[in-house]
Length: 176
Length: 176
Image (cartoon, rainbow over all chains, first blue to last red; front, side, top):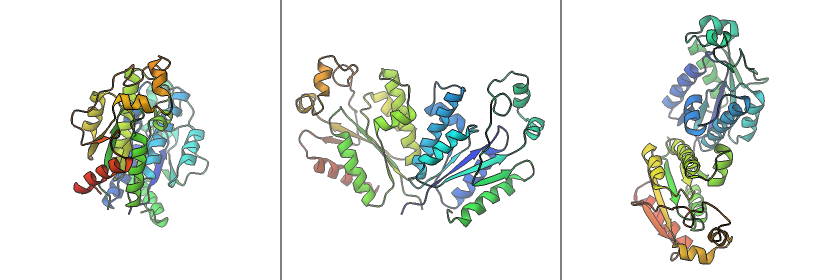
């Protein structure tokens, strides 16, 4: 018996909490006995996208590749968790359409002002000073989803709250 | 309960029977209720390796990407079936080492003379006349594995025989 696979597609600005949250969800699902694969933007870049840069086309191609791997995993019973910024709506929707298994888009929403204030790695400061190019939300667009399955608000919810919102959603749909 | 995943890595010259055989095996394993993903060389090229050519480096990069996807699928309970020529031993061994789940290399052995005689698509004729460049076994090396888990001889076995050799091997190891 193969489990019902699905893809959790986290999207949101840098620092919004995609990685932390996806890690918590992965742990919770593994505890329930599921096969879970986190597709980290950087790891996928290293293995599948050597040579691609950060232009719009190259970013989109990288997202398509993450999407292809998520699609294969989810249609084979695994839970694929993608946690890349994936700033462009069109490509996220393209990945969604290609999926056979459920594709669940999770918008990790946090206002830019909050992110600039937190900025633990100093990335926003550098982006605002022009030291980092093509930074989503600062010098490059970020297009929030129109109709994500789930939205979490990491400026005013704890990580545990956001995690539980997602787990409850999956539970209600009998996906876990 | 997640199944024990594994990777079946078919390697061999063009026309030796990798695709036909991998399709038969996929069907047999699906009938046993397994999640099976065939990673076809051309499909993977389209989705993961746009822009790569057929130089040694580009071929190897393509094989590494197939290997990465097979690794993720197999460690999540699926059966990944790769059926690319994968002519270079070093890269096949690199993919093997990266695997967490069992990696089963299947050498689809067929003498070049037989392939040249059969040649249903006329590819060998073109390669021998120099109309196709970088053709493994003719104008490019093909390095057979030193110690494949399974060898099938498609010049003197029927496809059904070869299929059964593989299924018996998996059965004996309690992988199916």
